[in-house]
Structures are given as structure tokens and as C-alpha cells.
Image 1 (tube, rainbow, N blue to C red):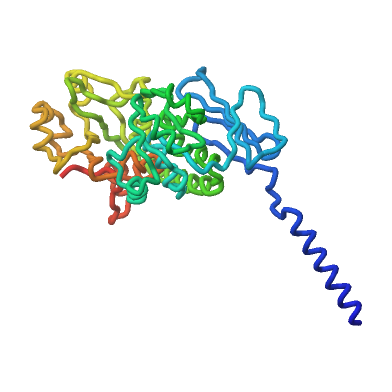
Image 2 (cartoon, rainbow, N blue to C red; image 1 turned 45 degrees about the vertical axis):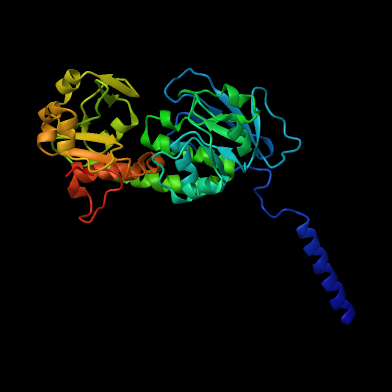
Amino acid sequence: MRQIFIAMAAMLVCASCSNKSKPTDNTVGKSTTVEIKYAKGFTVRNGENGMRLVDVKDPQKGKSKTYHFALVNGSGQGVTIPDGYTRINVPIKRTILMTMLQLSNFTALNAHDVVKGITGTKNLFDKDILERVKRGDIVKIGMEGNFDTELVMAANAEVIFISPFKRGGYDAIKESGVTLVPHLGYKELDPLGQAEWIKFTAMFIGKEKEADSLFNDIALRYNTLKAKVDSVGGKRPTIFSGEMHGGNWHAVGGKNYLAQIFRDAGADYVINDENTGGIPLEFESMYAKAANADYWRVLNSYAGDFTYETMEKSEPRNQLFKAFRDRHVIYCNMKTTPYYEISPVMPDKVLADFVAIFHPELMPNNYRPKFYCLLK
């Protein structure tokens, strides 16, 4: 009997050793599917042995330069990289970011430890990032077009997320040999498309499941509120945006993602053209479009209390607008609110702020705005 017991124990030990020698995770050698629903700027295909083939292009243009990356899990020995693709071993541990939109992705994914360089800290509120900069864990490499290449090298990044259609100045960085990866979320025209770039970021740092869960919640909240707004009948309010600076009125085009948020919140934007970015207008041109608009959206960085008196003093003709006279200016001060720092991954919160103003009956009585509120 004792001999039988010893034999059985030996068999169990051998079985245990055998199990330890084989991975129990059935995802090894495979990649979870990354499904893209709204973003137009990148696509993802699963390749061999867990490799992902990621194609990146300008989401606003049907035909534009496409960037190709092969994301390989771990060492990826024996993986054949297709022609034209740049290999990147993932998950990466060190990166440099160029925009607040990119930083918002890492913040939402709780991945500040991967960030080793940023362009600067202007209008930056995140205490953790500021502390990391103070300690020297994150370096400030300077603004686009005027990078400090020594600091770029000091960050020892595996990849640098860039915005190739902005000011650029990446030639000096290219010589460092670090892989440059375009992050084009800022060019998405759908608010949810912009937020969905969190999935793009997640593939580089191994947080795909977290990103998928986060985005699904964002999209659910956004679409649920939009559906409520769509059910509301009656006349829709009108809205315009921007201010006078340097002799021109700086507005956003009719195809801009912000214009889409206005529409999804139940208002009509006074500019209905095909422009996707900012457009400069003379005061008279904007006045012709917006003189009788119901609301006026303003986003700026103002030191101190921004008031109607401030607006009138900076441009006396502002008082000519109906929205000004009715005290219907919707305002966000980037000096006191981390707008660009977190709003890219919170389109549902931006939408809710506008719905609370246009259709307050759809929101709870105790609703507290995250970014925008009526100027008092």
C-alpha cells in the first residue's frame, strides 16, 4: 500500500512538472482581436505568432501616405516581417509623447511609467506627470520644430509618438534611430473616433483589454445620451465658436469634431462647410453668420476671472451678438481646467456639458459640468 502511494505521488509530481513546462495561457502565440468601430486613421490585422500589422494614415484623406508597423510580442523569434513594415517589439517600456492627446491615452490606461519624455508642461495639471518631470523621470524635450536632441537621446525611448502633419522638425530625431510612430487621433472627425485611438496606444504597451473596456464604456455613455437628445423635438438652438485674435476670428470648420459634438448635443453649428480644422474669418463674416445665434462657445487660457466685461473690453463689438446680450456664452478656461489633457478620452463628458446647457431637462438636477458651463 505504501509503495502504491509513493508511485501515485511520483506520478502527480511528474504531471505537475509537465504542466509547468508548458504555458497554460492559451493566448500565447496569438493576439486578441482589436476591433475598430469609429476611427478612420488606423487599421489592425493579426499576423503570425501574435504579430499585429498596423497601418496608419491621415483619417481626413482617402489617399495619403500610409505608415506600416509590425508589432511583435516579446522577442518574436522566427517571425517574418512583411515588406514595407517597421518592426516594433511590444510591449514597449519607454516612449516620448508630442501632444496632450497622446498623453490622455496613457493617463486613461494608467501607464505614466512608460512616458519618459514630453514637449512641455504648459496647461498641464496632472500631479503625477508633474512630479515625474520634477524628479527627472520624464524630460521636457522642447516644442515641435525646436527639439533638444540631447534630451531626446537621454530619454532612451523605444518609440516616439509624433504628429507628422503639424510643425514637425523630426529630421534631427530620425538620426537617433528611434522609431517614429504617427499618432493621428487629433485629425479624426468623429469624437468617438478620436477617443478610439486609446486602442492604438494600448497595442504598444500591452493594455488592449483595458483599452477595449474603457472605450466601450465611453461609447455607450456617448451614444445613450445622443439617443436621448435625438428623441427631443422642437426647434434646435444655434451655436457659434471662437474669438477675435490678431485681427481674425478663429473658428472651427463645419466638419470639425467639435461641430459634430454640437450637433450630437442637439444644436446647429452656424458654419456648415467642409472645413475640418480652424478657419480664420473677418469679424464681419462671423457676425453675418452668428449675429442671432443662441449660444457662443469660448475656449481660452485666461489668467484671472473671465467675464462678459472682459469680453467687451477685449473686443467692443462682441456685445453685438445676441448670445452675448442673452448671457449665453459657454466657457472653458484652460488655465483652470485640464481640457486638452483629458478631454480627448472623455467625449462623453464634453457632450454631457453641452446637453446640460441645450437640454437641461435631459440631465440630473445635480449635474456638475466637467469642462464647459455658462459664463456668469
